[in-house]
Length: 353
Image (cartoon, rainbow, N blue to C red; front, top):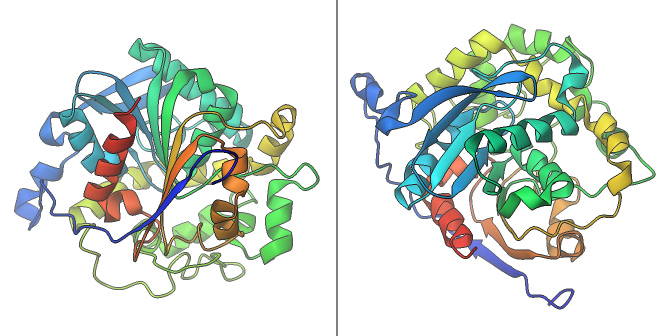
């Protein structure tokens, strides 16, 4: 019991996901194409850019936000399930990703830009509020959104990244550098152009496969001067059961067109965001929240996150945190690795509101 309210913490063993839309060979790849199962695609004007949106269904809007080196496609399973339950599932390619525009300036990726995109997107949908579901960098944007415009969010299902409490004395990247050194991946991402060149040398397909298949716990440390083994020093030649060759090929096809600069620019604004959010220092998140992470998630197992999540700090900052789920044996990309379980968790939470 914390702050007069109960936080339910569960450790769950994931149910094997029997994909409702399986791909067994290349011949069946049409079933997993970007237009699979009547998902609709369109472009909307938001906050000065053109944003690609995938959507399906009718009813209250559930807005899905993807993470670093991902796309709307990361939510392909949840879009199908949530839309079948009487909701309108909406999943954009975020600013700088996929078929959404990527402004060239690093400073076009601040928290104000990212939240502004979402407010404009929600306005374009003709609704006042949405259920928010987000993973990785999408989750960070989700917390910015809850902080800046809580009036637009009914409830928030957050995957992987808990609320990042602002330290008023130390800038975000500076604090990470002090903890893990210059080779910590976020520190390595800071210099414009440098990591892009190293990723290009490693190859787009290698980088994406290396990132998506990582099960390494703890802080990602990159060798100096190169992408090297990146997130996954033990990368296998074979893909995990939840990621097909066709899935990987879709990601590769989009990043071959865009490169990685858009996604890296999010990290390059951490210290700028620290400055911009000074007026909100100490403000609690009042939106109802359910948090889900894998016990092998590199975020959960670094930066003191376990102590924060389970020691009372998270609940103090997010008083309406209702439930924390830790999935046994699951790594960072839990929305894809345990797609059915995550879909069930989302539906069980949002239907209460």
